[in-house]
Length: 328
Ligand SMILES: [Fe+2]
Ligand SMILES: [Fe+2]
Image 1 (cartoon, rainbow, N blue to C red):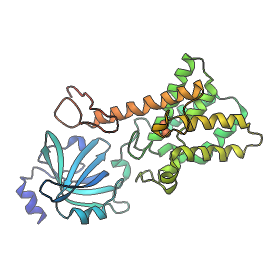
Image 2: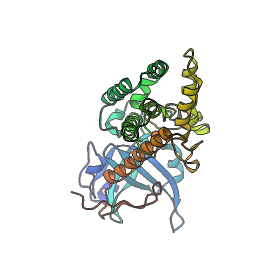
Image 3: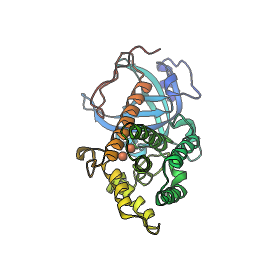
Image 4: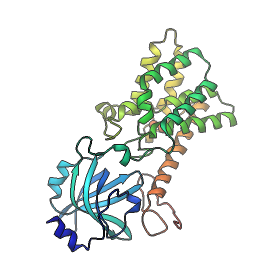
């Protein structure tokens, strides 16, 4: 049955490692991707189908399932690595997968590092850079103790965690990459505007730490119960408070300053901030966070662009298309 279907589509080749950026129209694909998005839709004809987005370390591609949409939807989950048997087609100038077979992978079927997008630099290298900045800028003994406690407890997760489920830095090492960037940008702003750099780098280091408990698993990127009900800001406040309370004599005002960084870093209430930034340092941290997350969204759209035009599709997250220009 499957081979017949393949013949009907004029099979060109069966791919081994079929990275998304290398897919060509007419290719037959039997390979693994992360199922990034899954939505059930109804065509104009009234027929239900599944609209899927797949990703790997090289890009993103859309896919459709026209048969048994309901049933198949129940056995595949967003954020998981799936195996697919599909044909690459072109639709509206974009490549897309017509899926014949899809299933979640068995344990140990493939190493997630072969598939999952990851940060450009190794997590170890990024951690070393972050540690060096903290060493250079932080001298207060309470803050040094806090860094030590948090590093001991969370370093392993920090090295691998994605920065988000979907929005920005949603790949292995993304949280650390984002944290390091925010600290570096904040440091630049701290120099420029004569801010308290010691506090600022602490704020950068801690601002998204709650994501370690917000996202369940680095491979699946699914949300924890805590993540859903509390969100990374409240979780971050809890983590920092819990550790600071173990340090005898930790000044209350210092904890308040650190907490303010965490609860105000999204900048405005409409973006989930619990407070607007009320110190020059918190304002600088917010902008460092904002520029880094937005640049990452832009970069991802540009890198994963596989269409033929000069602009990306409209992206709801940033409320615009992005000009791509000529791709070499
Ligand atoms: Fe955040
Ligand atoms: Fe952030």
